[in-house]
Length: 258
Image (tube, one colour):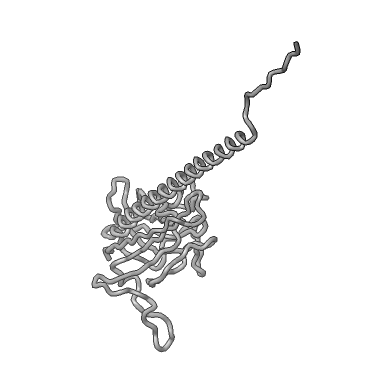
């Protein structure tokens, strides 16, 4: 009697194996696509939340400081050693500004002064420091760093005010314990629109009037400005995005005390 070798019918055919591979690929692709889109959506939402926080912080900081300021100024009068945009005539002072209506854009490699203002000097007990009947004043510089698109605030403490609680600040890369980093006001700033008004609502613009003889601008300047308006435009590109999907603006209008 001859013996027959049994035929093994276990395993997959090539057709069945291809079906399994294709089905697995389709399901894996769907899962990956869903996960990727979910991550993108999450980053976009987080970017929107971060932008909202940045706008709220900027509004709180600027309203508090400008509303309690003693006025806008063309240039700091207290010299400092870390001027980023120096006056051509003296490197201890920031370049002079005028009350003009304009848009200031964040440009790589460029530091753009936005405005200068002054406030009373306070001691450690938060009392105003006086020289006889005259109050000492500190000065501040609001500027835009085009490299990191950040709006910073530089503090310039009055050295004559004894027990002044304010410290003069420095650029973040050179900050020390005795010279803290400039305060961050807002991040991802693409541009700022700046306008000034009188209390009656008239626009204050230094370039609005020209001397007919010399051709120089002689329009109203910072002493006439009683309301400051800053519109901060924020543009943020979340991870996994090709374009800046978060683009928002916030307008801050503050009545000054001068």
